[in-house]
Length: 427
Image 1 (cartoon, rainbow, N blue to C red):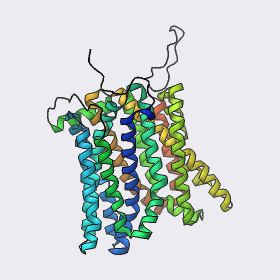
Image 2: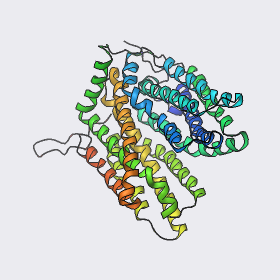
Image 3: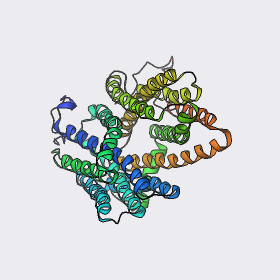
Image 4: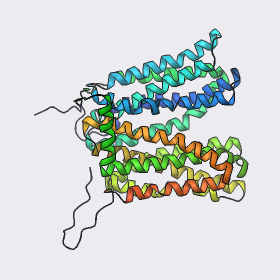
């Protein structure tokens, strides 16, 4: 009988599994460092290099370009590897070295905008490859019956970073200056690599037989489009991301200029979303264990338009607006984690092991691609119909994602009078 790859005894809680704790800590540290750089690098460009609006646009675009250029290929590469962890470690080391060049170049007096843009491209490319190999690697670390909980834990790490990152970034920029604050990102990547290096679970993967990069990429696209569950998840994800970005493109202007929310409170409202994500991770694990991932997904998608709809309709005194936004932001943070967690768990369940890298990269590629289009559409549409109309249209558009999920096999099938009832197919 083949020996299990999972070294922890069956039934051991995730919090007591050493290798999962190492993986979780690695992701949390790395993402928190990235949150710091999201503030430090643009501040470096604005305050020290006097970047133009066009240069700032290029810098912002550089973070998402690698996903569009290399996203599909990264999944094909991941499925060809016999070991995923060395690739993950290499990605973190490359990112650490690239980030470390920013403060070094500043100290040497050679830092410029092309340098910042190049670093953003290198770090973005490494991140794309990391995500491609990390998804199938999770299946090696965690037994099948604990993968939903593991996904929720990793989603919670993003919430931790959302809460801690901006505050830490502000302190580092204040006391170290923006370029030196980027060192925190370099240190976080290096720390993540060391934590990943300490994982002991055997890292063995049966690679898919490759028939060329193009064929491998097309195979991932074909499976994502023909499997009814994967197609529904992909369609819902693309719909949500497109209209979410039309909202993001205008919401800051709307919050400040129309709702009159003080700029200092906007950071607090963002933190509420992160706290909601932490609560959502805890609730999702228990709800999925009791009701199944299918039902949690079916319910969570109904609440996606809530925060955007409230923002578009909100009026009244400042205390009322801030209070309502804090509550809806917290709820939405939890909903996003619940949806993302169950989406990841269902993708693992529905995809053959040798295709997981490609299917995950297909979904990431599609999501990243429509985000750029959605942001552009939101900005242009606001010039024509106004901010409030764009926000309400965004809420309506996100509501359409419900149709993808509720019209799919994820919805429980009612037995006819000629059939005996059967339980919903759950992992």
